[in-house]
Length: 377
Image (cartoon, rainbow, N blue to C red):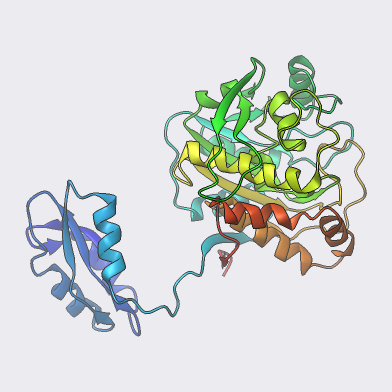
């Protein structure tokens, strides 16, 4: 229980939280922040107000406390494990609407800083299952975001910036926000750190405009993919943020700067995880990037396919997390349990799609272990 200290007692607004919540069976460790006052009687007074719960000795932190000092203190506490979040938190709502997306985003408790990019797929014409502007506009406006994308490396209607901007207009995105094609002026390089694990890529090439934004909201439509098995958050920050040249390097496991074809499948899946890790490292692992995935109209084909197979799985819900590995794992698990999942699971298995998540966890991009928090309940 954290709070600012006012002359030896907790700040008064904390009192209402204490008196309106039940602490029965809970372990409570008070801590406070101040530049001069000590913990005082604050913890004991809060315990009296609560009337229930195991209230333990607290601690006061000065304004100059370091993150390492706080972590050391938390590690020293004899905390019970029951009821704690297992792995990363993934928030869920079954309300697939602009309001539902905004609610699950707000559940993250995340506030962007500076200029905000909203990464999504603009969708390949004529009939792909991209996220519709009316679904995403609430979140886009809430963060005052600029919609960002990169050009494709495989041809199609979005291979050049002018063509791509026309698709963005035709699909309604320019009507709700400014749109920026990140690799319109080439690439920028990000280092790849495997945290001790072997990596396929030594660096990742993203669109050069990537550095123009301080925070990223990654909006993904979870679905199948002919090459990757599935597409979700990790694909969106790897292939999705890659410049044309970067896409070729990911697809071929670093072998080609000019062609996306002919790469080894394992190298491809691992390169996606590594490229995603480079983006996460640059932005600070959740400090400046969060992920929202929509599970609706789920075909075995990606939104980069202009004529995808008919969706086999329909409306499941919307997920949000600060962990791209956890949100992809949760999306996979929910789809696997849904009616009509056989074709999607077969495609993922055929392309060894789950290896992307295995390697992503190995190199420290995130955790496949998660707690699903249903905000509808």
